[in-house]
Length: 282
Image (tube, rainbow, N blue to C red; front, side, top):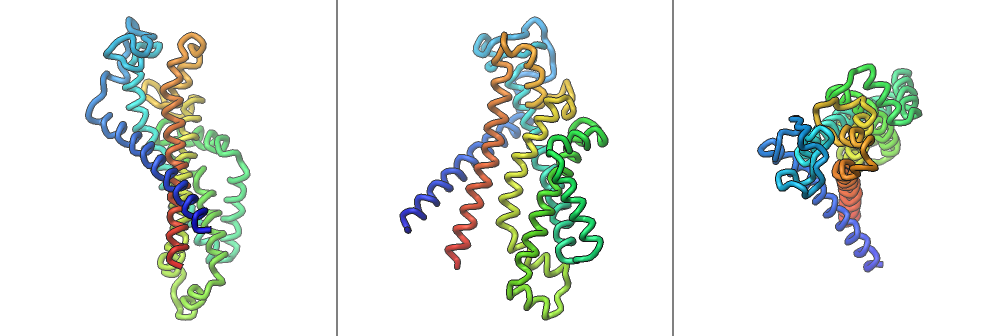
């Protein structure tokens, strides 16, 4: 039994390690992009368009149809991925936690309306909801952040709502209520620490989802707009030339896969680590 548990922990520790390495790689690329980039990622040079990877020492990953350096655009795109992914998830998580906590602890007509609204938002496919919102809010980074944040809100609201209801019967909650603790203090001091493990895991997974939605919006022309760089936008621009110059889609495609995989593995590994830590304490 102990051997199987140790194997499980080892497996998830590997997931956490791989996820951490992949995330750190993206973060490092993002930080370096503010200090150094091989070329201007926006500057066009049609005399050097469609350079294949390795054909020129100055353009390691080659150039696109406008002669822009692909490596520099990948580096610039990492800023968009981290900014939109992290900020939109944080924004959506805060709103969702507040709404879910309020609805679970109030139990009145307002809380019922909130949860029915949340259920309605969850009924829409995520990308469709984000597309509708970005058309209302506007395209670009700000529009993407707001649209994706609203896409994230129902996930956290429903998660917090269900967890609060599940813990209401616990003795420490009943004891706290018997001492006349306010709902706000009860939620902040008792519920949040109790839900921390699930919230942290969900946050990491939601960043991965947010990145997928951002790249999808940019691919469809609703997210980051040219000449700015976004991995989804780079995939969209490579569609016309995929059969002739497939390398145009390889770099942004790999970047998206590795980043999303990194956040998913990190979330899964961290969740198992925290759960094992709780089990050890018990």
